[in-house]
Image 1 (cartoon, rainbow, N blue to C red):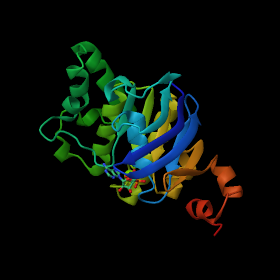
Image 2: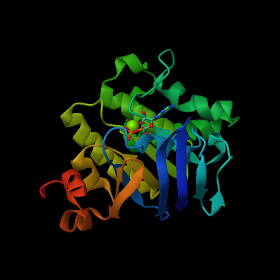
Image 3: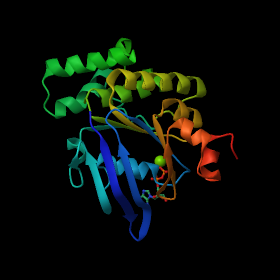
Image 4: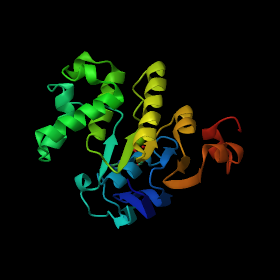
Amino acid sequence: MADLALKGVRKAFGGLEVIKGVDLDIRDGEFVVFVGPSGCGKSTLLRMIAGLETVTGGEVSIGGKVMNGVPAPRRGISMVFQSYALYPHMSVRENMSFGLQIAGMDKAETTRRVEAAAEILQIGDYLDRAPRALSGGQRQRVAIGRAIVREPEVFLFDEPLSNLDAALRGQTRVEIARLHARLGTTMIYVTHDQTEAMTLADRIVVLRGGRVEQVGTPLELYRAPANDFVAGFIGGHT
Ligand code: ADP
Ligand code: MG
């Protein structure tokens, strides 16, 4: 587990600055949700935390250590994307094992981790199936399983439920909350779904145009939105 700090983080693509100085302290074990309109920089911010994108200004620290320049696989982070990106020609078990095996983990430990994750996510019955034989919700659980087996200090989720229908979205959301309660790991979760934000977050970060507009608990943002823009994301106030 680890706390996480962003200090004056910036990102420019060519001459266009899309993240314009973000400061944020996230506690060890906290569940933080990023919300904001399409194009405001949510994914870019996550990708910089993960090390999938360089920062063009400021600092990303995890567990007190500056991560600028540390490659993604060495940051202790797992990221779950909207598209599950499973390997179609591998079974569920192989999908979950693959990353550990290429990292050189022995077979017994790999099996232990895969089976523990499968139990948490209740996908133990599908371990020998191919991804195409699974529903969208099951596939996303496999993708989450693949993140869990790495035993990361921080989980990043980028709109993980957007491709699921409403019923599955609700169910998978509850599982993610349960996962957080069980593992106690720091989690950062991007969504444009107000229900997800309000039910999952310890704190919500509202982003707008590459800047932080307001940070607070769901109740704080609901009771005292800083402006109409925040109110519009939290609902009921505009
Ligand atoms: P969000 O996830 O909030 O929808 P993104 O982080 O994907 O927003 O994008 C933020 C801004 O950065 C957008 O204007 C987008 O077009 C731009 N952007 C993202 N990735 C790149 C890239 N690789 N090259 C150029 N512009 C990019
Ligand atoms: Mg995005």
